[in-house]
Image (cartoon, rainbow, N blue to C red):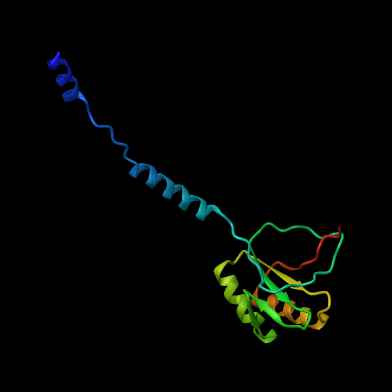
Length: 137
């Protein structure tokens, strides 16, 4: 009887769970989701948009240019001078030539500032320039 139990103990193999391939797979999935995720860009300022019944939602990657109610121009969460719109849009278009420009002007901002911003975008070579509006509820 002793020989049978001794033989069983000798034949037992220790069971190991190797989780290294599992960790590798989790990191690969994480990288995949980070690469394929599109991030929402924001201007960095709060703007009270006007409403329009013909407003549509754009899903493409765009360059967002905000004009606040006190006529400050904001691009990529930093304030720029209205005369520097052209140079900044040219730089942004160099990174993504197919991007359109969306001007998010506050309803209380001056129309002249919006027109100067649109002119700077057009001179920078932007093909698609839009003015953002909210859809009425």
